[in-house]
Length: 130
Figure 1 (cartoon, one colour):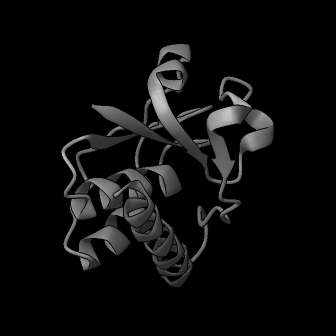
Figure 2 (spheres, one colour):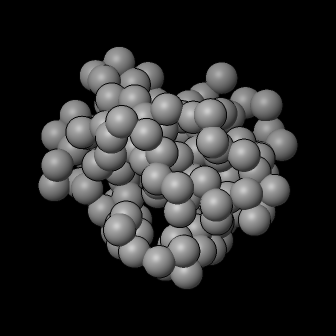
Protein backbone atom coordinates (compact mmCIF):
# COMPACT_ATOMS: atom_id res chain seq x y z
CA UNK A 1 0.00 0.00 0.00
CA UNK A 2 1.35 3.41 -1.01
CA UNK A 3 0.43 6.30 1.26
CA UNK A 4 -0.47 9.75 0.01
CA UNK A 5 0.01 12.26 2.83
CA UNK A 6 -1.86 15.56 2.96
CA UNK A 7 -0.49 18.12 5.43
CA UNK A 8 -1.75 21.48 6.66
CA UNK A 9 -1.12 23.42 9.81
CA UNK A 10 -4.02 22.32 12.03
CA UNK A 11 -5.26 19.21 10.19
CA UNK A 12 -8.74 20.58 10.79
CA UNK A 13 -9.95 21.51 7.29
CA UNK A 14 -7.84 21.43 4.08
CA UNK A 15 -5.81 18.27 4.66
CA UNK A 16 -8.78 16.45 6.20
CA UNK A 17 -10.91 17.31 3.16
CA UNK A 18 -8.13 16.19 0.81
CA UNK A 19 -7.72 12.87 2.64
CA UNK A 20 -11.47 12.17 2.59
CA UNK A 21 -11.85 13.16 -1.07
CA UNK A 22 -8.89 11.04 -2.14
CA UNK A 23 -10.16 7.97 -0.29
CA UNK A 24 -13.71 8.57 -1.62
CA UNK A 25 -12.74 8.98 -5.30
CA UNK A 26 -9.75 6.63 -5.48
CA UNK A 27 -10.57 3.12 -6.70
CA UNK A 28 -6.97 1.88 -6.85
CA UNK A 29 -6.34 -0.39 -3.84
CA UNK A 30 -2.60 0.32 -4.08
CA UNK A 31 -3.13 3.85 -2.70
CA UNK A 32 -4.58 5.27 0.48
CA UNK A 33 -4.55 8.83 1.81
CA UNK A 34 -3.83 10.01 5.33
CA UNK A 35 -3.56 13.53 6.68
CA UNK A 36 -1.79 15.34 9.49
CA UNK A 37 -0.95 18.78 10.80
CA UNK A 38 2.17 20.54 11.99
CA UNK A 39 0.21 22.04 14.90
CA UNK A 40 -3.04 20.04 15.18
CA UNK A 41 -6.24 21.71 16.37
CA UNK A 42 -8.52 20.12 18.94
CA UNK A 43 -11.31 19.45 16.43
CA UNK A 44 -12.28 19.55 12.75
CA UNK A 45 -13.61 22.95 11.66
CA UNK A 46 -17.41 22.95 11.35
CA UNK A 47 -17.22 24.61 7.91
CA UNK A 48 -15.20 21.66 6.63
CA UNK A 49 -17.69 19.18 8.07
CA UNK A 50 -20.62 21.05 6.48
CA UNK A 51 -18.98 21.48 3.06
CA UNK A 52 -17.98 17.80 2.94
CA UNK A 53 -21.47 16.73 4.01
CA UNK A 54 -22.80 18.57 0.95
CA UNK A 55 -20.58 16.24 -1.14
CA UNK A 56 -21.99 13.20 0.66
CA UNK A 57 -18.86 12.59 2.75
CA UNK A 58 -18.96 12.55 6.55
CA UNK A 59 -15.78 13.72 8.31
CA UNK A 60 -17.52 14.67 11.57
CA UNK A 61 -15.88 11.85 13.53
CA UNK A 62 -12.36 12.59 12.30
CA UNK A 63 -9.78 13.97 14.72
CA UNK A 64 -6.80 16.20 13.88
CA UNK A 65 -3.47 14.41 14.29
CA UNK A 66 0.14 15.49 14.41
CA UNK A 67 2.57 15.00 11.55
CA UNK A 68 5.27 12.51 12.51
CA UNK A 69 8.64 11.61 11.04
CA UNK A 70 7.29 8.11 10.37
CA UNK A 71 4.37 9.48 8.32
CA UNK A 72 6.73 11.61 6.23
CA UNK A 73 9.16 8.73 5.77
CA UNK A 74 6.58 6.13 4.72
CA UNK A 75 4.49 8.36 2.43
CA UNK A 76 5.20 7.92 -1.26
CA UNK A 77 3.92 11.46 -1.99
CA UNK A 78 3.25 14.43 0.25
CA UNK A 79 1.00 17.39 -0.54
CA UNK A 80 1.14 20.41 1.73
CA UNK A 81 -1.75 22.84 1.74
CA UNK A 82 0.20 26.09 1.97
CA UNK A 83 2.33 25.27 4.99
CA UNK A 84 5.54 24.12 3.30
CA UNK A 85 7.55 26.72 5.22
CA UNK A 86 6.37 25.13 8.45
CA UNK A 87 6.77 21.50 7.35
CA UNK A 88 10.46 20.78 7.84
CA UNK A 89 9.69 17.07 8.25
CA UNK A 90 8.51 16.64 4.66
CA UNK A 91 11.32 15.60 2.29
CA UNK A 92 11.42 18.08 -0.62
CA UNK A 93 11.95 15.34 -3.22
CA UNK A 94 8.48 13.91 -2.59
CA UNK A 95 6.63 17.03 -1.40
CA UNK A 96 4.51 19.39 -3.48
CA UNK A 97 2.83 22.48 -2.02
CA UNK A 98 -0.69 23.18 -3.26
CA UNK A 99 -0.69 26.67 -1.66
CA UNK A 100 -4.36 26.60 -0.69
CA UNK A 101 -5.96 29.39 1.29
CA UNK A 102 -6.93 28.46 4.84
CA UNK A 103 -10.74 28.82 5.05
CA UNK A 104 -10.68 28.83 8.87
CA UNK A 105 -12.69 31.65 10.38
CA UNK A 106 -14.33 32.42 7.04
CA UNK A 107 -17.78 31.79 5.58
CA UNK A 108 -19.14 28.43 4.44
CA UNK A 109 -18.84 29.81 0.90
CA UNK A 110 -15.04 30.01 1.36
CA UNK A 111 -14.94 26.42 2.65
CA UNK A 112 -16.89 25.34 -0.47
CA UNK A 113 -14.51 27.26 -2.73
CA UNK A 114 -11.42 25.68 -1.15
CA UNK A 115 -13.09 22.26 -1.18
CA UNK A 116 -13.85 22.55 -4.91
CA UNK A 117 -10.19 23.44 -5.58
CA UNK A 118 -9.01 20.48 -3.50
CA UNK A 119 -11.41 18.12 -5.27
CA UNK A 120 -10.12 19.16 -8.72
CA UNK A 121 -6.52 18.62 -7.58
CA UNK A 122 -7.32 15.27 -5.96
CA UNK A 123 -9.10 13.98 -9.08
CA UNK A 124 -6.13 15.06 -11.21
CA UNK A 125 -3.75 13.31 -8.81
CA UNK A 126 -5.79 10.11 -8.96
CA UNK A 127 -5.62 10.16 -12.76
CA UNK A 128 -1.84 10.65 -12.60
CA UNK A 129 -1.49 7.63 -10.30
CA UNK A 130 -3.30 5.28 -12.71
